[in-house]
Length: 157
Image (cartoon, rainbow, N blue to C red; front, side, top):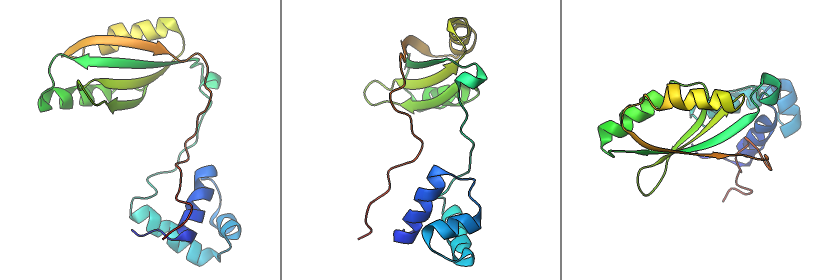
């Protein structure tokens, strides 16, 4: 899908507040409601807008510890990677999972309540996954920046 300036304005508004009504969104981007809704539906159909979510405060939910865990696998075969990815996706604590360059290590970010919850997650959830060779954790001391809105192109050529 080729995005134009109006699509980018719509995306910018929805990335800031996806709960906007179509009427309010249309007002903010200076369109009438019907063409605005047509554009939003087209962005959804094209997969540009994947879903709408409510962002919650982890601390309000008792999840005060944000941990980055680097996981090395014993084997880097396609089957081993697929099995690890399938198993890691089963855990609600895992907020993000990336296959990193180099030695086919994975980097995951988990949200847990405290050190006890982290220990239980590692011992009861991670270590039973077959093929894990090494687990290294790094703790986030302070969240300096967190955002969910992707950078949008400033201009359409």
